Image (cartoon, rainbow, N blue to C red; front, side):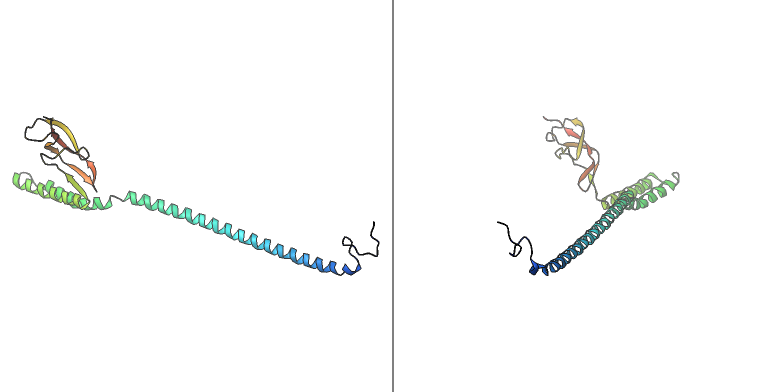
Length: 187
């Protein structure tokens, strides 16, 4: 059955709904304008976030370059304090070398050399360098010693130091150069 023109139909607005069309249109226009404003706000927020990201990335790269430059400079001048502390020792050596050998006696020259040696050892100690000088009878330690020869020694326990041939040195507990020692043979 077909609707008659006089019967109201939900699919076909009648004359009483004609006033509703402009109101719905105004509502739709307002919703569209609100969506456009929201889109523009979101685009602005996105652009601001991209700008912040670009600035943060640039700041990070600049900080990395500064840290690399600081590290390179620290490496280049790392031994500055050590070298500065050795300068007085060099001065003492130069004074000793400037002495006329014919004017001095051997005992005075040896005393001067001992003073320079003591100065040198003080500088090393101040730089956290320790001497590795095992006494005879000390058990052989391959981490701090190098066995350069074996000796028969009835008084020494097996695999112990019988003689120090050359001192070793360590820095902060890490061996720089092992002590060269003679080690007793097993009986």
